[in-house]
Amino acid sequence: MNSRKMLVTGGAGFIGANFVHYWLVNHPGDKIVVLDALTYAGNRASLKPVETDPNFNFVQGDICDTALVESLLKEHQLNTIVHFAAESHVDRSITGPDAFIETNIIGSYSLLKAAKKVWIDGPKSQGLESIPHRFHHVSTDEVYGTLGPSDPAFTEETQYAPNSPYSASKAASDHLVRAYHHTYGLQVTTSNCSNNYGPYHFPEKLIPLIITNILNNKPLPVYGDGQQIRDWLYVEDHARGIDLVLNKGRVGENYNIGGHNEWANIDIVKLVCQLLNQRFSQDPGLAVQYPQAAAAIANKAESLITFVEDRAGHDQRYAIDAKKTQQELAYVPQVSFEQGIDLTIDWYLNAQDWLKTL
Image (spheres, rainbow, N blue to C red):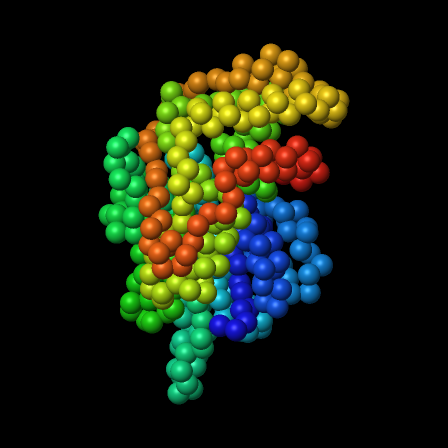
């Protein structure tokens, strides 16, 4: 497509907002309409830097509202959907799975149904070819289940084996996207990504939770022994990967996007503690700005680490094999973990106004 007119669902969430920022900078002629219900993890303030861009529009609404999605596709003549909107916190899926079934499965189905009606059925009823389009579905590595310490990393051929209501609901949505391609000819792609980190991350997830808890002199909860391993990717590199999938990926294919950057949870926590200890020792002004953190840092931030009962059904290890994405799309993460974690900590140290909006 020479020009994309794009619906970004969940564009006020963590990854969605970063994707919107990335796309408007790197594709200045394209149009973006964000659809977000602004539930607890969706924050309009995350889109403040792009509010005045003439190619940006925001609509507060639910992806389960099929009629609304149809009207947006028609009104703005949209030809691309990038679907981020999802309930994504495993803990919440364990205590309240209903919202995950509703948003991740029913919501995805609603989008697929609207896209098929506008892009395929409408033109067909008039004897025309379908409108050139792309439906890109953003999924997770958690649909593949868990790995042992020496198991090979997940590939696109790994059998799905979700272990939480969250990952099961995402797996279901992946299958629906595939089915709409093979049954109806909807032009789809799917990406399965490893753990993201970076700016605008809601502080219930590990890295922002550790940073914000240190700044507020609160305990740093670590599940079990903290030896669960995750592959970490800077969020802008995820946006870059989706860009490549949209513009170079084969229709109907899945692409893994990973960081080649495995860390045990406890080691991530200790690293963030050490980096904040350094920040406060190098910049005395931070102690004035964050007096509560100064008390924690005086005893070293590691003193706040608190081991808690492990999460039910906690997956031990995720790791992404992104060879297919590298070979077909020339994808390589551009932000090293050392750079990315520094950028993330710096962002949170300067994000008090954003944090107050939560």
